[in-house]
Image 1 (tube, rainbow, N blue to C red):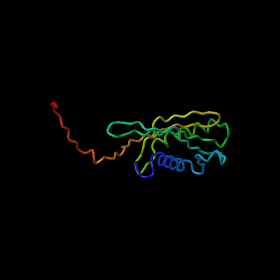
Image 2 (image 1 turned 45 degrees about the vertical axis):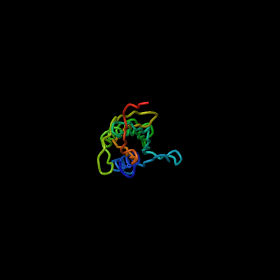
Image 3 (image 1 turned 120 degrees about the vertical axis):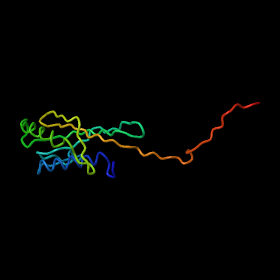
Image 4 (image 1 turned 60 degrees about the horizontal axis):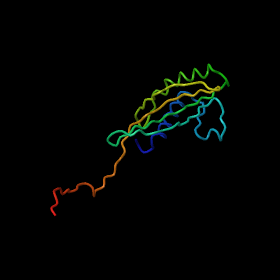
Length: 147
């Protein structure tokens, strides 16, 4: 992964997709609760990112998101379902450092008049290991010690 980092770069990619597809709809992040939210609006929420170690210093970074949509007309299930279907296509991929990353586990549910759209963008990476120059080679003396 590049200089900016996985989750932040993915959030930027999601934001760009939403701004292109829904011009004029406000996007909120962590500050939404403090600022108040004016519908229609999206609230981008990072769920529980994790890293799964793999062989050879590699890992898989799991980055799940809950993209919440607050409709212009409160309680409008038709609006929520329409936006959900659009998000299925729009968030199939996002751009991350010039490459497209595919969204997996795309699903949604309607809850208390809000759309919750779930998607994960999973990345592979390699942990850089620091080599200790003092451990490059070692001599081992084997044999039987005579008394």
